[in-house]
Image 1 (cartoon, rainbow, N blue to C red):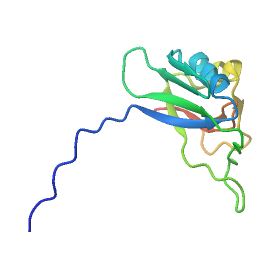
Image 2 (image 1 turned 90 degrees about the vertical axis):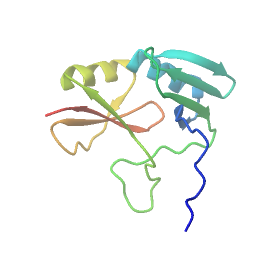
Image 3 (image 1 turned 135 degrees about the horizontal axis):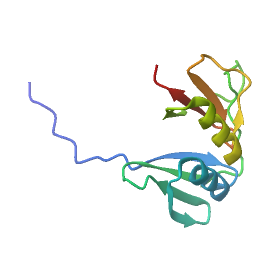
Image 4 (image 1 turned 45 degrees about the vertical axis):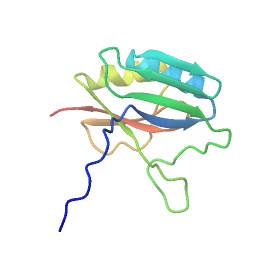
Length: 129
């Protein structure tokens, strides 16, 4: 049996989030994370961490339907979420709220706080215990 050919070089450069307004959601993540806006085109934006590494991209989707958290049968399901580690959970929640996030009504555990970005995407602020 022969080995399959090696894949070409592959590098993850970004995770893309759909939103009713790409620019609005990119501006939120710039405020939240302190990252740099590196691309701003009609319907498309990208932010990158200042130290390098994969970033986040945003595309305008006029028919965007926010996911439901927690998931419920027959509703728009969350297909991914971002985990953002912090050393001070209450301060991170306050900062995220000031940046434009909304705390989710359902919180699954004490060392994780689920937030919703302005387009309704859940993201988790968490602290290592």
